[in-house]
Image (cartoon, rainbow, N blue to C red; front, side, top):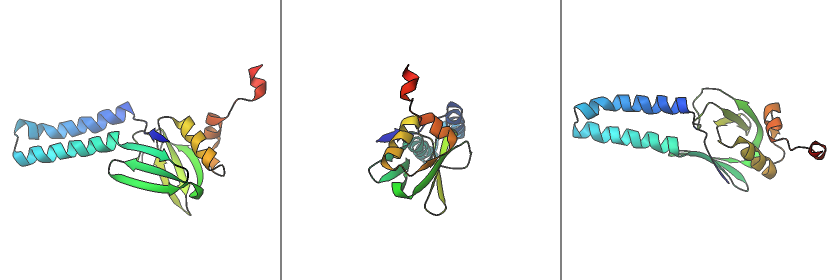
Length: 147
């Protein structure tokens, strides 16, 4: 199942605003080389912005961020917790989850639909530990709640 990245409006405005600001000199005094480079940069940033997402298959989590790809075996994932770390990661939002896997590896992602992402990954790999906030996010109502 595929989960696109959540995209923060302010982050999009910052990234695209700075990109367009940098493009102004190429547009005002266009040289063939400048224009080609600027178009390539805009396409690359667009690929990252619109091509960031996460796919959960039977045995792995595939993380895509434009041309960058990463595969993580579900059985290697130890823990998932919420974070707002601004460190570089394949995420278009600061509303992130940190995935710890292997001995000491980490990746931060930002699926738009966190609840279904967590439910899907836990269904395929129930041994993954969740922090309290994520456990509460996916907690199913008990039968007593319906009365």
